[in-house]
Length: 430
Image (cartoon, rainbow, N blue to C red; front, side):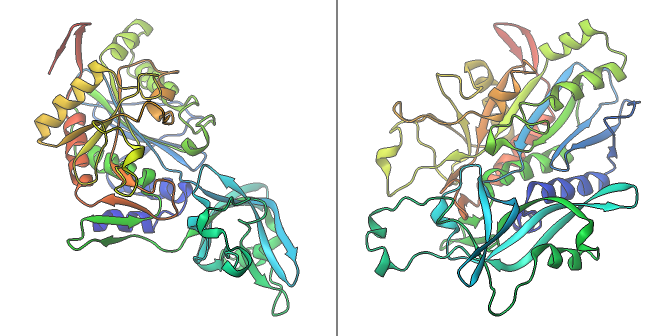
């Protein structure tokens, strides 16, 4: 678990997470492919691609003839606030940062805490444009609350306006009037005028820690969904495919609907699966046969039971921290799970000796859609939606169970070591 907390510490944005994952893959013998070049894949080969510096897809081809694909997917982005292109905002004697909401953060949790800035900048260098990662890992800004004397109803609930209340205080112009791009330019040893554009986000400088009398909980930012992303990667690196091509798919932009080129509603998964089959000299007919022997695990954390608000949960289908992997169900199809996919994944967990709990929302509370249900629009294969229970989802600081990640990795290793033998609509061979 300490390695997971270090992973979170090193990955304040999806760009940093993708970079770190690519480095780990390279260190483990994976070869990076470029989408604009021809792929010449070999049996026994290990490969990965990146998109937009924020999504990564890695795969392993077995030495034997392949029968199908084992796909596991998670996402690397988290709710936060993004700096607007013209982000300097003068207000009184202060300079603030003009930001907009990314995803669905719980606004109040971002207030009165030290905030950093991280992301990427694009710079002009001679006849090319280069992208540079940035992590200003120091207290750059703060979003201050109003004093209770001017807001005496605050403890009864106050609506926060993102254009008014959520703008971070950046500097006191009476003391200094530094330019953020000047500061960034000095950090990466370039000229300010060479910066063409940027994708910069606020980051929570309070990183991860264990809490609880027996350290049974993890408190950290970005648990949703870096916990599943980290777990899938660890299982992927420590498993050996039999007659399936194992894929580790880590998307960006899930928090804003996935409808980007690097999101689950883009072409990445479909294109890569087709290109793999083509490079292995599979015909179109053989590719469709492979899809019929394929399975997807969509992993994104679940809403754990909150002891202060039991009325928000279904009495017989709530899930709990430290009680194992959560299988998500929804009759309206917002999750990809059905009886078949749930049964197969439960069988995997039984083989791995891992606990499973089944979760459904109250019938009067809707859940969101997932990577599984979105991906199936492009690649139609059986899929199950799973996750690990957590509290305060989308808070700047979330809480998870310290025992669950180990079970998750063990189950995903078993998945990657298995083969989905779908003989007909009524029979699956384990």
